[in-house]
Length: 238
Image 1 (tube, one colour):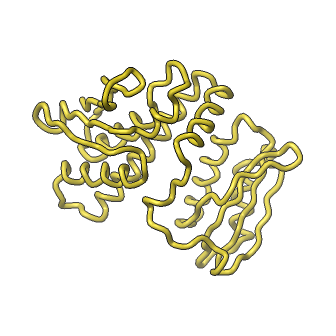
Image 2 (image 1 turned 60 degrees about the vertical axis):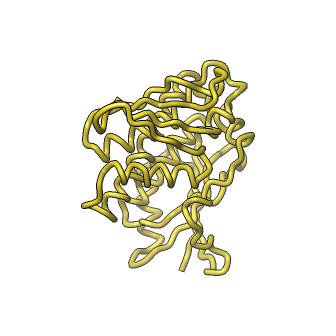
């Protein structure tokens, strides 16, 4: 049985933070399969609808856990069962992100206008968490695999999700001085009109990957960018 959970919050400015916290609450309470179906905007409140699968749990328990986590910051929460036919199909990860470059540009510009300089920090942090999540998944499935090959597999997944084609140039001993070249980088194509925007999500994503895989305090630094007229975006790992 699948359920749709609709949660609305008071603060529009904190919507990204609240959704992130909400997904964490669900995970902490045993929900391992959940995805955002749509954003909601009702009567001045803003939130999201989430499709989830409950096994061995009750919706009442999940709802109470969400209420306890948010308190008065939450306007309302409701749930309804949905059939397997109307639930989202099990689609591959590479097709999960369906926004094109123009749509991503609108989304990022909205973040930047709302959060100012905090938008870059938030996107970088989110990118790090997602990159780390990708790397942890690879480590769990192939714990004895070569870490550099796992890094390439993580980049392959990033590429297949539509974020750009990659190429690795090895300039020194692993894991240092790796240069990751991103051709047609989605984040940069989407933000051509945003002055000073420096690809925080992609930098964070790469940083999260390498820190998890190589267990060192590595950082991805952008040294070339298509927004500056370069033929590709280049990120140095060091």
